[in-house]
Structure formats: structure tokens, C-alpha cells
Image 1 (cartoon, helix red, strand yellow):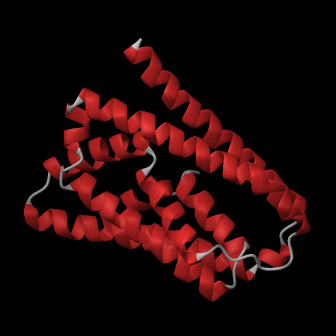
Image 2 (tube, rainbow, N blue to C red; image 1 turned 180 degrees about the horizontal axis):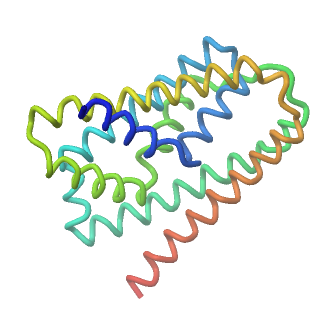
Length: 203
């Protein structure tokens, strides 16, 4: 029962458009299926670690300390702006999509880490949500629940990587460029919003 609840919560948490899904989508469109799945392993590992940290309450320290929270929001806002800029900068190159352009492994790991841990609002929201759920469970209930959560995110990320990689040649280049442009704008606006929040709080 709690394993199933964890699966449902995991899908609900990861399905909305976010930096993790943008990473997996772009990764799938630029790599062979095998490499896309391999790269998706990193986004899942960082996401699973985040879920564990949030669920077991370590992240609650961030919520309770205003200085730490503001610092994370400020740094995270800058990182999010950087991600948005890189997506925007590379958006036009997708018009000539056809040849595979795999990202260096080091950049894959760094981008996957920033996509998960560089999103301060998700860090705070995830801590509150998963932390609150953990508070209402016994230890025997919590384990199958969190296993269900990370199982759902694994299914989601690897599923997206496989499906989009297999059908990438059928995706219109202009559509892909549009997705990247919209994704970049959403991310940049979000990053600016975080910096504005920090600024208004401090000044």
C-alpha cells in the first residue's frame, strides 16, 4: 500500500515540466539510446538523493534558517539563470538537428547536479512536502514509501530518455527549437524571480 502511494507521489512530483525533465529531453534528442539512458542515470541518482534528504528531514535545516535559505535561493537563482542562458544559446543549433552531439560526461554530471540541487524552490518545496509525509508514517511504512518514490522517478526519467531517443528523428527540428526557447524563457524568468525575492527580503 505505501509502496504504491510512493509511486503515485513520485510521478506527481517529477511529471510537471522542470529542469530535470528539460535535461532528460535534450539529452535524449542529442544521444544514442544507450548514451541517453546512461546520462539519465545521473539525473535520477541526484534526484533520488534529493528525495531521501528531503524525506528524512535533513533539508528542514534550510527552511528553519532564513540566512541559509536566502543564500541558497540567491546562488540557486544565479545557477538557474546560467542553465537558461546555455539552453537559449544552443536553441538555434537544434534547427539543423540530425547528427548526434553528445555532451562531455563531466558536463553531463554537472548539469544533472545543478538541475536537481540548483533549484532552491524545489528543494524547499520538496523538503516541506516529503518531510510532512514522513512525519505521518512509522519507520516500517516510510521505507516502502520512499522506495516507491525513487522507483517512480527512475521509471519516468529512463522512460523519457528511451522514448524520445528512439523517436527523435521524427521530431520536427523547429518544434525542438521551440521547446528549447520556451524552456529557456521559463527557466530564466524563474531564476530572475528567485533573485527578486532575495532582493526584496534583504532590501
